[in-house]
Amino acid sequence: MSTPPWPTGPPIDDAPLLHLPSSTGTDPLALRARLGDIYAGGALMLACVALHIWAMFPAYPGLPPTPVASLPHDVAMFICLEAGWALAATLVLTRISVAGGVAVGAGLGLVEVGLLLADVISGFEVGKPGAPGGWMAMGGLGLGLAGVLLAASAAPMGAPHPLANPFYVARAIATLPVTVLAVITFWLSWQTGQVVYTSGPPGIIDGDTFAFSVGPLTASLLAGLAIGLVALAAAYWTPPEVGAWALIGVAIAMVSQLVTALVEVLEPLRDAVHQGVTGGLDPARSSVSLTADWGATVAAVIALVGLAAWAALDGRRTAPGGEPLAAGARPGPGEGSHDEPWPSSHRWPGSGS
Image (tube, rainbow, N blue to C red; front, side, top):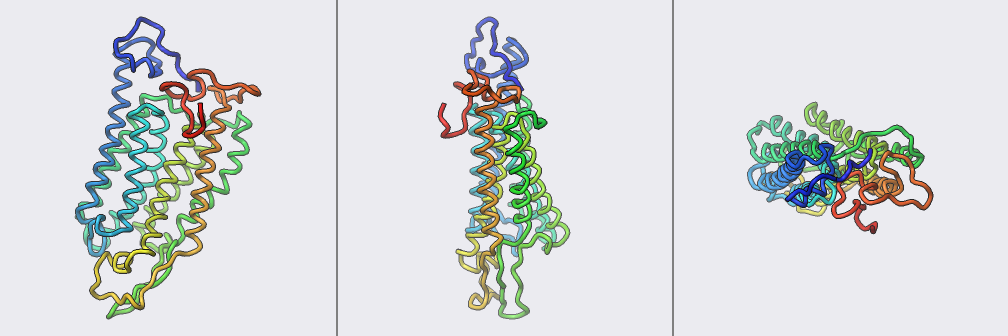
């Protein structure tokens, strides 16, 4: 996809608009409208961050419903999600890479839909559907995804492209086993152990998706499928940098769950397995530990980040139309990013100019 031309008509009073590629030519009203959509999209992503923070304090679905802020593992999860949405909003609002911010939000948001939906459904299953924390988090996610759509409508995002570029072939081949590993390990259990009560039978700790009831099972399956679909789309996306940012969004969503599992092993058992309630729990005979699948999922996340770096490198040596650059050639100003040159062609963080 070619970068739209810079405005060439009469000067426009609002100088920052000149940095926004547009197919609308030199129409200042159309350029301002596109810029307004970008800023509005970024603002909705910031609103998503705010609602995620707010959702940490009222009761969150569980048995019993407990505020996120009172449980270390839930705090860790929400901090990761909030950081991901803050990154997406920053990329959009600063216009470092509008397409990159949209991609981060899309990758993160598609996985988070399944994660939060599983929590809300669990609230219904335990007879506590009115716990407001879950609904506030879902509302924030809705605002974030609305921001993704709005900003995407005003920025050149690209699309999946056939394997016309030889750079894509090796990466697409490498993506398939990484994707399978990421999805399968995401669905399996990262923890094992038991919860022993002072009265009644013990409960087995098993986070295997296929051991869930129908509602949470469906939501967890959707989250895993979202990981796979985003990873596969990123392998073929042109420009490759957009796919790279989408992989970063998916990785953040997965890290939020991995960190949660790790903190549950390290925190007091009453917080890890009993929603912070000590009554009825026998801590001496209860336990929770990580399984080998947790380590395999960590490896999958590292591999996804590696694929993102690979895609970013492919973007540096790919012409705007998706064709490989000639040997030794570099994209010209406004050509290599497929996004707005602000203040010059976008580069992956730390790659230099």
